[in-house]
Amino acid sequence: VSPLDGIILRFGELKEPGDMIEQVKGFSYSASSLVGTNLSFPLL
Image (cartoon, rainbow, N blue to C red; front, top):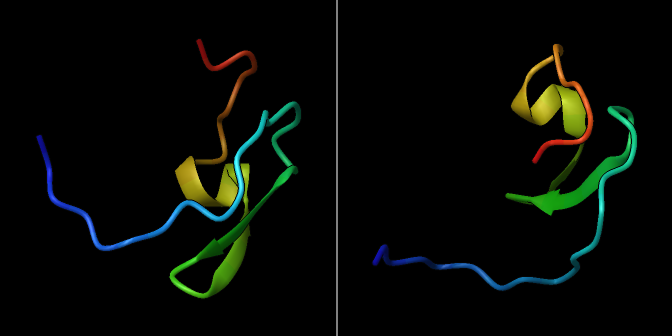
């Protein structure tokens, strides 16, 4: 179990590397810029 200090504001599927992840530490990021440029989908 890990402590956290955040609130989940939105959730859903990321279907493309350019899909946006909103409000991480006050900023929006594309999936590829947040977790790396060599994303291949699906992530499972």
